[in-house]
Length: 217
Image (tube, rainbow, N blue to C red; front, side, top):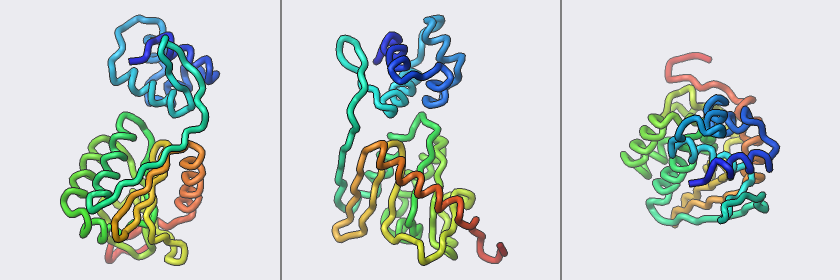
């Protein structure tokens, strides 16, 4: 577990105020102030949230203990096989738990997902929703198959709909390939993830709110 000295040093290295660290870690400013002044023993979950926020911003914690800015991270991971989608969803939940970041998904066909993953996919989605992880989903205009609450969806025109699903979560950008073989490619890089996040939000803001069968726009 990182020390309070490392937290303060990392905040100084990033030129962050306590308020900014609170915002990025999903905590309150008084919590950060209390922690840094050692007025109470911090919970492990609190330290973990702070560490994730600082590492996402480019801080590396060293032995000693110390802190430094790390060079741009670029990691790739390939998940292959019939359970690749299940493993991707576990990685999403693990990456986003304890944060207030949204999961962004484009190119979804919920019917195909349901047929592929069955009850296991539905169970993971339910657990993710219980964890408070909000999802933004871009689906094809007219698709009325909703696994999640309808407010999580937006419709984009068929001409702009990608049939290769992609996911943006944390510093990760993932692509799901239907195969065969079924495969997930995960790229971990903050710049790449932010670039696709901006692109996604541009589509989201221009998209339509979906309607259920029998309802009118």
